[in-house]
Image 1: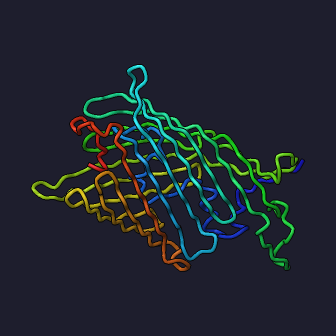
Image 2: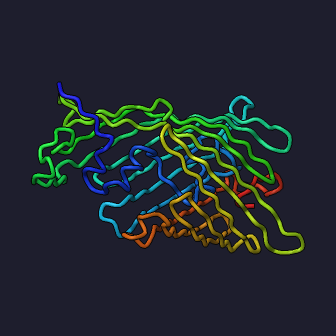
Image 3: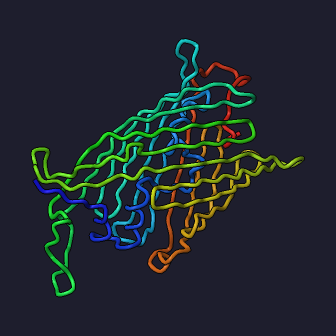
Length: 325
C-alpha cells in the first residue's frame, strides 16, 4: 500500500503559488457577501427568520486565470418548534472547482435558540460530507533537467474520496446588531483519494479546521431615508489568517451601494436591491495583491428569497433580520 500527502498538489498542477496558499490555508470560499451568506460559515444562523429562507451564491474568482476558483452555494433554512423549544433547521450544498480539484459539500443544519434580552442566542451544528476529486489525467509535468516528470506525489489518474465533515457555531442577533463565532471542519478530516474504492494505494488531503468571527449592525440616519450597515469577518486556520470589512448604504430600504476590503487581497464594490421578499446583489473584487498582474478581478452574485410560512399571517410579529430590515 502506498500513501502520498498531496496538500501541495494545486501548486504543482495549475495555479502555482497563488492558489497554493489557499490550499494550505483555507478550504472554504471567501464570499464578499459574507454578511448575507452567514449560514455558509455558521450553522447557528439557521431559522433566524420567521420564514423559509433560500440563499443562492455564485463566485467567479480571478476570471482571467485558467482553472481559477469557481464556487456555487445553496442553502435553505426555517424556524421549527419541537416540544415548545424553538429550533432552526436547514440544509447547505456547495460545488466548487479550483485548479484540478472539484469539491462537493453537503450538510444538514440544526440550531437551538433561546431569547436573551431583546435578542436571541443560537447554538448550531452541521453534520455532513465532503467529497473531493482530483483530475490527475489533466496534469502536465514538464520533463527536462529542471523538473522531475515522474513525481509519485502527484496522481496521473483521476482520484476521489469522501469523508464525514462537521461545522458548529454560536450566534446572537439583536434588533440593532448581530455577532457570531463558528468552527468549520471541526475534526480536520483527512480525505483518502483513490482511483477506485477497491484501490489499495491512496493520496491524502487534509482539510484545515477554520475559525470565523463575524459581526454587523444597522445604523439608521435620523430624519432621512438612509441607513448604514457595517459588517466584518475574521477568519483563521492554524497557519493562516485573513479579515474583511464591508459597509453598505441603503436608500429607502431598497437600493444598496457599498464597499469592502479583504486584507492584502482585494477591494470590493457592492450594488444590490431589496425587493418585497428578496435581495439581489452583485459584488466586484479588484485584487490589490500580486495577482492583479494576471487578472482584472472577481465577480460574485448573491440572491436570497423568503417564503412566508403562513401566507395569511399578518406581519405584526414577523421577525426580521437586521441585515434586511
